[in-house]
Image (cartoon, rainbow, N blue to C red; front, top):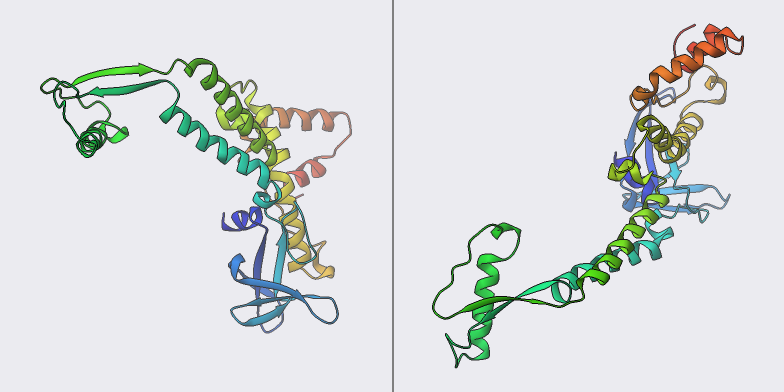
Length: 275
């Protein structure tokens, strides 16, 4: 989980701990913000962490795929900075609009109860009401009316069109951000899901597999010597995600087996099973 967070923020740095024979026996995640990447006189990358400099033999570096400057990757938040800033600004504007200009607002009339109230006294009355009755923590509390204080609502009359447009714009921003991470919008919202198997497969193939394959390649080339790569390899299993598609997968294997496209051992190899 921490490595994926690092990946979205620009890339991962993993220290390879080896035994006396040079075999990797442990991996340790390094704090991304504490690693400085440079190149030596031979144009080879070197990594400085807590005052100690290491070569690529000791550090496994997996840069993010959105951009690469020759040393480190660029985070998705920097690569798509404009879209993220637009979305954040739109959220702030929406909250401000609904709080201050859109919809109905409460009016507390104290002209009869306190006709000579100063601005400071009016502010104290308003702050007292906000503290006792507004916000989610005070939801459902009854409003206590005393004396000649009058309560009424003021409708700004601009809520319908503008609020609908703001809602559409916010939905559009959600779609843009979902596209950045290659996540099907229906997978996030639960709306218009339709065929759950198809949506899950789409989420897997577009959002997860591209990142997982980059980790697989980095681990395989960074951890195993060339002579051992055919015998040992690291591969992620997606079976827990594709449980809903198990029946269709088995039927596809059966069809390929009957028609001589795949052998039993080839099918078992696809499932990471022994021959």
